[in-house]
Length: 62
Image (cartoon, rainbow, N blue to C red; front, side, top):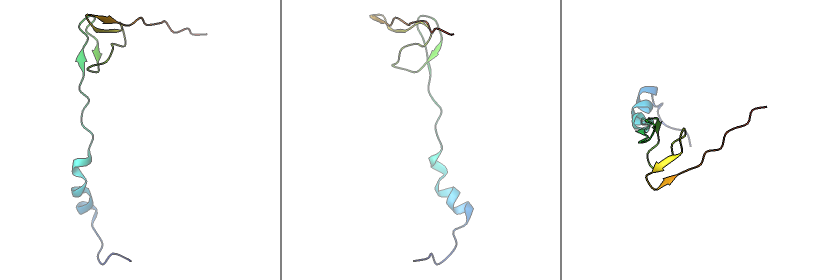
């Protein structure tokens, strides 16, 4: 079945206006001050909280 009337681009885009992505929230690492995702380990130093620190291996380049 075909639609009776054409739906304009403005009407379609108005309907989808709330589909936009939101900004990512970052927090600062307590140890080094680098930006990181909340509840995740720091990419630079591996710090999670005062009880947990991950050992980060060094990448080898050839």
